Image (cartoon, rainbow, N blue to C red):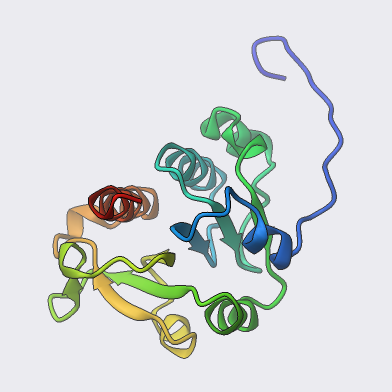
Length: 178
């Protein structure tokens, strides 16, 4: 219940990686947000709302993520979850390799590390999968590039890091005329 209102609905069948990768308006500039292990429903809802606001084409969720359709996630996302394509992976490492090899998506892991390339210096490719924060060892096995969102620990919460990264990716698309 929320303010005395109750709702029930049917979920659509889960989307396949192929349908998420092939969906969209046909342009070459595509942005995907990879979330391997978002376990907090509030964070999930914030990330969904941020992704929708910055024009991310789809979310790719890992095996460890909470359900994006939990009531709290839906509430925090302000309903944008119902309009943003998402794919829940059973094998994130394999799916990231497929995105890279089959669809030519560049994987970019963002870290808080002074040795990483600052995000504003990274040339934005046409197809980009952003991986904000955490799971460092897994990212390197997936073959990600390293970009730095910010060298400040103030940008450490995953939703805030996602916002900075999505903003930078959308600015790059605007700068390119995409």
